[in-house]
Amino acid sequence: MIITENLTKKFAENIAVNRLTLEVKKGEVFGFLGPNGAGKTTTVRLLTCLISPTSGNAYVNGLNIKTQAHQIRQNVGILTETPGLYENLSAARNLEIFAQLYEVKDVKGQIERYLRMLGIWDQREDPAATFSKGMKQKLALARALIHEPKIVFLDEPTSALDPEAAHLVREFITELRQEGRTIFLCTHNLDEADRLCNRIALFKSQLLTTDTPANLRETLFGRKVVVHLREVTPNLVQSLQTMAEIKNIKIVDNKLVITLDNPEKTNPIVIRTLVNLGADIQFVGELRHSLEDVYMQLMNQHSST
Amino acid sequence: MNKILIIIRKEWSEVFLNRMVLMTVIFMPLLFSALPLIILFSTRNTGSADYTSDMPAQFAQICPEGLSGGECFQVYMVNQFMILFMMLPLIIPVNIAAYSIVGEKTQRSLEPLLASPITTAELLIGKNLAAVIPAVLATWVGFLIYAIGVRILTSNPLVVGALLDSMWLLAIFIAGPLMAVLSVNFSLMVSSRVNDPRVAEQLSTVVIVPLLALFFGQIAGLIFVNKTIILIMIAVLLILDAGAVYLCIQFFQRETILTRWK
Ligand SMILES: Nc1ncnc2c1ncn2[C@@H]1O[C@H](COP(=O)(O)OP(=O)(O)OP(=O)(O)O)[C@@H](O)[C@H]1O
Ligand SMILES: [Mg+2]
Image (cartoon, rainbow over all chains, first blue to last red; front, top):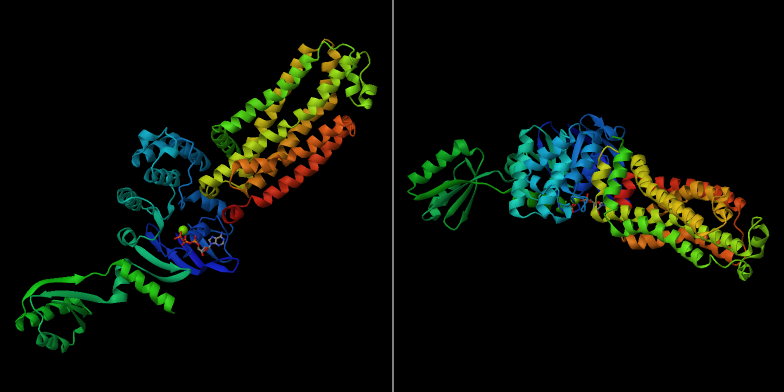
C-alpha cells in the first residue's frame, strides 16, 4: 500500500529524512516511532504530497507521489499533528467543508455517522473552540475519515490527551484496523505502538529497524525466564552454569534470570534440574522486555555509532 | 460542488463571524457615503457664495455650463469625495484577506486543507474572490446610496450628472474591482509574513497611499482628476494586478505555506 524508495528530504543543510526505504502492507497498522525531530511529520507530509522529496520516491496505493499527487490526496486521510480546526465554526460545519472538498456523496449521512461513532453528535452545532482537546482530536479524526480513505496517516493521535481520551482514540484505531484500513501511525508512545501495531519502524532521520514488536524484543534481548526461589545458594548456580542449554544466568535478590535459546523445550529440563537439586521454586515466568527497553537500546546503539 | 465555491463559502462563514470584518463591510460604505452627503447638505443653500475661491482654478473653468458658482462648488465637492470613496475597494478586502490568512495560520488549519484534493490555484482564487466580491458589492451599494443622496440633496440634476459621468462610472465599475484585486493579493502576501491580523491590516493599508496622494494633490491644485487620469489609473492597475497575482501564486505553494510561513 505504501512503498518508499530512498525517500530523502533536506531542509537547507538539515537532512530530516535520509534514504528511507520501507513497505507498508495492506490492512496493517504500521507504527512509525522516533524521538522528537526524528522526521516523522516530515515523512507523513512527503507521503501525503504536502511537500516534495529532495530525492528518492514513494508510492501510495500504487500512485507516484511525484506525479500523481492529486489522486493520492483523494485517496488518503490525514490526521495532522495539530487538529487545525476552524475554531469558530460548528463541528458539523467543519466536517461539511471537508466532505465537500473530498466530494463525498452523502455529506449529511457521513457527518452523522462519524459524529455519532465518536460520541460528539450532541455537540454538532457547538463551535469547535468550545471543545476539549480530546473532543477536538475526535473531530479531527472524523475529518480525516469522512471520505472513507483506505489509507490513513495518523500523526501522534494520542499525544496531548489524558489517559481516558487516549484510550478512546486507541479503541477507535483498533476499529479502523478491523475495517481493513491501512494505518500509518506516528507515535512516541511505545505502549500504544506495542498494543496497536502489526509492525513497527524505529526511525531517527533514517530507518533503524522494522519488525513486529515481539520479534524486536527477541532479537535484541533473547528470551528470558525468571525463577523465584526461596533461597539462592551458590551450589545451585554452579550446577546450572554447567548446563549447555543455558546461555546466561543473572542473580537478582532471590531470583534467577536465565537466558535460553528455546525456552519451550529447555525450560522443563532446567526446572527439573532445579527441583532435583532441592531448590524451593516459588514462581516461574517469562521476562518480557517492554518496547521501551527495545527503543532505548536501539536509540543508544544508534547514537554510539 | 465547485471547489472554488466551497472555499468562498467557507471563507464567508468564517470571516463574517468577525465583528471587525463585518463592521468594515457594512459600515465603511455607509460612512463613506453619509459623510459627504452631510457636508453637501450643510452647504446646499450657499447659492452663489464665494466658495469658488476654495477650489482649484482649473475646476472652475471646466465646471459644466449652466451651474451657479455654488452648484459648481457642489460638483467639485462631489468629485473630491469620490476620490476618497475609491478607498473602499482598497480597504475592505484588506480586512477580509488579513483575517482569512492569519486566521488559518493561527488555527493551523492550512495543513488539513492543503492535504485535501484541492489545487493551490482553486484555493487562491477562492480566497481572492471571497474578499473581492464583498468589497466590490459594498462599494457599488455605497455608490448607489451616494448618488441617490446627491440627487435628493441638490436641486440641479447636473450635479448628480457629474457623478454619473463616464469618468466615475469607469472608476467605480472597472478601477474599483481592479483595486480590490490588487489589495487582496497584497494583503495575502503581507499576511503570510505576520501573525497578527491587525498588523497585517495596517501594513496592507499602504495600498491607499497613492489614492490619498491623488486626493491631496487635487486639493492643492497640483493634479486634476479627469477621465485621462482614470484611464491611466486603470492601465497601471492592470499591470500591478498582474504582478501581484503572479507574486501571490509564487507564494501560494503547498510546500512554501507549510515550511516557510511562520
Ligand atoms: N520547515 C522546516 N524547515 C527547516 N527544518 C525543518 C522544517 N520542518 C522540519 N524541519 C526539521 O526536520 C527535522 C524533522 O522534523 P519533524 O517535524 O519531521 O520531526 P518529528 O519526528 O515529527 O518530531 P516531533 O516528534 O517533535 O513531532 C527536525 O530537525 C526539524 O527541525
Ligand atoms: Mg511531528
